[in-house]
Image 1: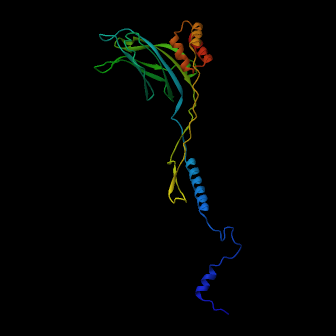
Image 2 (image 1 turned 45 degrees about the vertical axis):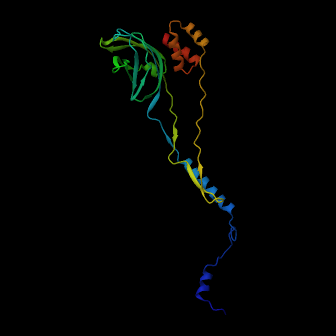
Image 3 (image 1 turned 45 degrees about the horizontal axis):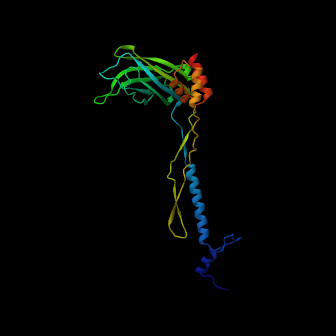
Length: 270
């Protein structure tokens, strides 16, 4: 009988007992290594995609559309005609119109401002300035305008709001504004928390190859239809008491929807 040495005993302990696995005596090729690397890369890419977290917009209740149409002031300050512009503050957000060059006492802007209305905000702070070339712009008039409840209920409203200034409270003139509100639900957007690059080993070259994760491509929204001049003329014939520029502003505020524009003008005329 053969003597069992400590070395042979160690070999017996390493012996495999039981059925052999499928990969037993299988020769690992470069293709096998590449397949494993590709599988690991796919898992890494999936983990990166899963690491996207939704980001909800701040506490907004909807979109407020404000058209600053024109103003009628009681006095022209300065030697030459004034160049007025309007600054609006809605919550913590500030918006400005363009300057009505040589607008004087009757400036026109017809500027449409779309802004998100924060929860709890029900007033608009308005300041009217005269743009100066060689000195600071001069504050001419101001107003605190409470957003009408009818606007928050979805109606379109045109109104002349009184302005305060050097002449006194509500005695500086008035400003024509059109307001509408849309209770738009703000869709969450996705922000990325990890860098979208994974280094994958390449068997052929032995170097690491960068694999880039393509970001989600945003869907391109189709532009809304635009009312033609003929449509605007017909609508103006239906509402001759409303200035055509105001009708254009109402059309912008209602996404150029002809029926919505007519309904809004009916509300303004009633």
